[in-house]
Image 1: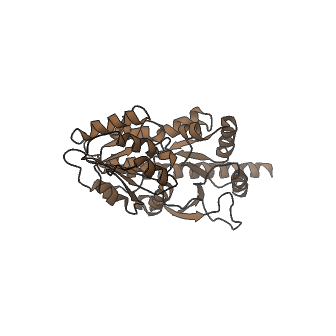
Image 2: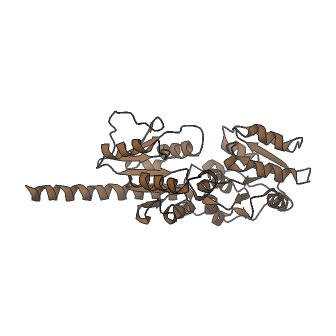
Image 3: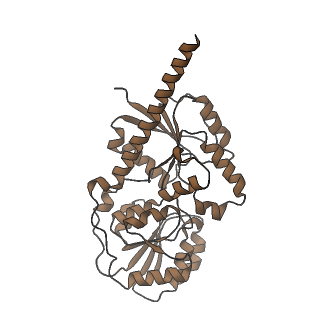
Length: 345
């Protein structure tokens, strides 16, 4: 049996969620059973002219007006090849915080997504927004929640006793809302608790200034080993202003760490697995949430997931089903085109 050749295109190779998800796709045994997955890095907004030998092409590219001609050229160059786009970035709250000309942005999304056979949303909340906003038709949407290998996180022991160290993990960027978290933590008075911030980014100086002389707040820098970072904390806080899904949330829950989240976008997907929503995105509400968390024992945890419920299994099953669907559809289209050609002779 001929193995399916799946080529993934990416224009962002910095350490982050997209890179880690792609690494998982390339290495997951279940996904390599009937397909060969390969990765090609492209310049943002440009594709190299060489031929791409693939049965399916998957875009993990950033959608923009600058990139649109490249996406049109991709569709024209491969009219009979299934094209899939994975939307790692855009969400309802991304639009709220970053998009001034919302009508123009909506036209961009509809135009770009129409070039693809399927568009993958990385969370149910993101998928619902894409459909509700009119960016895509429901039949074009496939929801596959992002995932990485969680075995090492599940192997970590659960924290015991009162929560003492809260972790914030991610880029030091306005998106992550760490400014709200630092202000909230400074308003707490318990000298025995700490906030450990893991990450690098443009907001580091501003966050250090917000932290001031509060020695309970420590900046740990970039965490090359996310498992070791998770092992060093008792709970995780994610006050993000927008978030397509949130791998840190997935990892925190796998590691049996209590998780506080802002109830927006893909972070809502984690509530059924045990995440606790902080009602408002302001320092006073987050202060109260931190105090409630650190004044009690560890939050009650759900029973261990059954094997069939593991996020990795859902991810693998979703991708295999999607690849089967798009390739079967193109086989049917080729057969129909061949029959029509014969009739015209």
